Amino acid sequence: MSTAGLALAGVSAAYRGAEVLHAVDLEVARGELLVVLGPSGAGKSTVLRVVAGLEPVTAGRVSIAGRDVTALRPGLRNVSMVFQSYALFPHLTVAENIAFGLEVRDVPRSAARERARAAAETVGCAGLLGRRPGQLSGGERQRVALARALVREPDVFLLDEPLSNLDQALRVEMRAELRALHDRLGATMVHVTHDQTEALVLADRIAVLRDGGVEQIGTPDEIWRTPASVFVARFVGSPAMNLLPAGGPFTPPGDAPTAAAGGDRLLGFRPEAVTLADPTDDVGVAATVERVEVVGEDAYAYLTLPGGHRVVARVAAARRPGAGSTVRVTVRWADTHVFDAASGRRLGTA
Ligand SMILES: Nc1ncnc2c1ncn2[C@@H]1O[C@H](COP(=O)(O)OP(=O)(O)OP(=O)(O)O)[C@@H](O)[C@H]1O
Image (cartoon, rainbow, N blue to C red; front, side, top):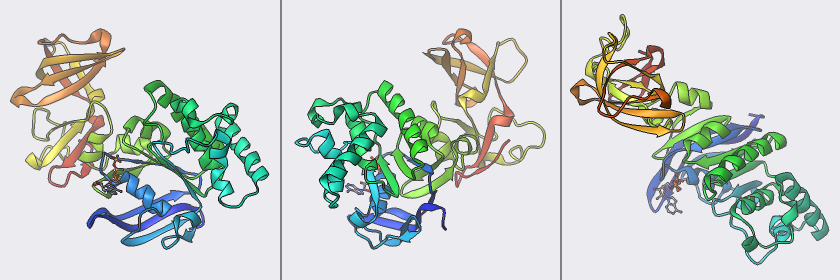
């Protein structure tokens, strides 16, 4: 495929005899920013290492820019990797760190310096060229690591949790800068994170990884609105999506497929899809408010329903119920999800 930036076809990989990637299929279009999202141990870093050639595949093929690189050593793949730890050389200046990858490729020193300066300008660290990594803040080191990655003009950028060592404010700022950099360069990027907000904000598409397999690939909107499984539904969104037996306290309207489904279906809905009313209102289901968390303008009410079912509701902080009080709970049906309890796969909306 001529527009392919990167493709994994049936890629498996093993670590110490145990398979950690199982026949992964993944296509990243040229110029696309794909975020690989998943919990610790899902195999996110292994995906990057396999693409970079740092880890052998036990099955399948990896191609970059239309070229099969499965058998190529890392140095011949034309990818740049940015690590969580930045991996800068402490004894080299910023300029030398950025130019390092060029000089080992026999780019003449003056040309390497010039390209390093241009790369530093692109990521906003041109003022730091004479310093050493020990004299830089975390955010500055991150910029240097990015400059070192892009100076080589790779076919694909591989970013392994590059923002996770930064404090919250800087992470949010660098996240936006990274996206802007991607758009400016038109670069093909694979960005690994376990942070669902980072994934939703950054990605053109998200690949959700679970136990070494791809659970779902889609745009942030698709992942959010039509999660393919209970796993995706619960992993993306905080607090996590509510899940109840489909035959539980909430009865879907009319002849929705869940109504006849019995106990082998699960009903999912996010805290945002729950509405609370006064106990005297003749709507929904009665519930007890166990506790309330206020997060600025929002509040999360943790409720217990008849049968001991638990539900979290998001409400405006100014209109939050008191802990210990009774409320009536309704669910917006259009924003519900029905899952098969055995497989976890999504079946549709209630
Ligand atoms: N070089 C390695 N060292 C240690 N464990 C590894 C290595 N390569 C693979 N594994 C194992 O493979 C599985 C996937 O690991 P991987 O690091 O790819 O997951 P991850 O999703 O990136 O997790 P994390 O977010 O914790 O880094 C884990 O069970 C891990 O123990």
